[in-house]
Image (cartoon, rainbow, N blue to C red):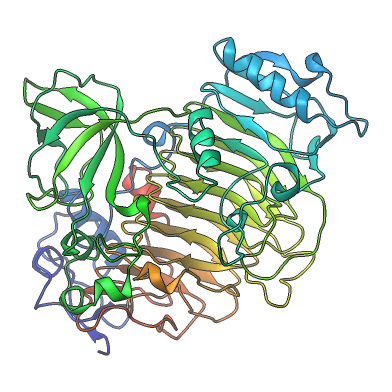
Length: 561
């Protein structure tokens, strides 16, 4: 259905979407919205971006098109700390002279973890390592003297330095997960090894703390069966059953008409319970969230609004998060993998960078990764900030990957450089990945000489990419068995394309209840992607070809614009 121009963004038009909205409501320079009863001073006439933001502020957690990403990043968007130095890698025998320092680095990290945390300092120099550095302890920070001063030279891939990790079809899981610096609890690592990495990748959940009653998207106050095991400040996991009728999946896709017609068992067997092909990771929807307050014997308030409804058909409970790592980081250094040729797609041996797996409130700051298959990976990660980072050198598979129910992470001030060795024949570079029921994640303030906005199937929803310049030359991926590319409320906001390719960035024609605002450098409004859902997607295309007055949606939601 071609987009239709509507004269105004109003409360009725946005908060009352449905029959009134077209498949892609278009708002641009030819048709600017009226002020629609807006109080003076909040937005100038004819300013769609400011009007959208104004309406979002009226009900931040329940806007029909815009997600609430104001709490993305470390501890709801705080700046990561700088703990004191507790030890140096040289205290454990590391030397920057070509000696294999793997054991020394891991011993230094262990020492810091067993003594309550702190910075493990890596002095200037090039340090040779042949296997991963395991960040198994909370509060530990691996810190160099600067990206140009401290270089960790990894001579082996994960295949060679740790262990091979192949699926039955020969694909390597190191193509999309695992790191040379790897934040993961020892219990999570042990479980993965015992399952030969073929089981779940996520949280090792603990006891049920309370059953949860029905609630609506945007609510923060929940009625629970009891609050005796809930403590303010604790991170818990809200877990919902994913029923065989796919009603939860339809809801996460925005409940647009096409979600009812979509053949979920055949189109998305990896997501659908009872399909015979469901990934164990998707049997439940899991969202870690901090308890802000206990308000009585049966009432609790969360630190963030719900991203979806809680309904009787999707039984919900709060569970202990289980073994994890928190308040740990890596900063001020370069990870340089040995330069080896890029393999065919998904056969990558694991020339990787940093991986955050089943951890929360961690960070990577001022880190460069060269010659990688995967640069920065988020696998079932929560509230991680990745800031001031660069991916360069030989062509990557995933420069950034956000997968397997990763939530509320922030990647900012990032760069994907022009690759010194281009993508090999039979290989693919994706770019900024979102997949696998991941929600609340933000990519912002980026410069991309390679890649695209890779929405990689399995229904990622409520994510934002904003204030990014991109040479749009990558490709979207994802297994066909993972189902729809997009869930609801994906926002692409203030994106500057330098090669006149709208592919995967202007998404109003394919993404349900999405907002594409201020995409510049292209005339075409087509995504170039195949639609999963027929009919009216209730999406929005605004300010096409123009820079929006609201430069960065994340910062604006945090009150910085």
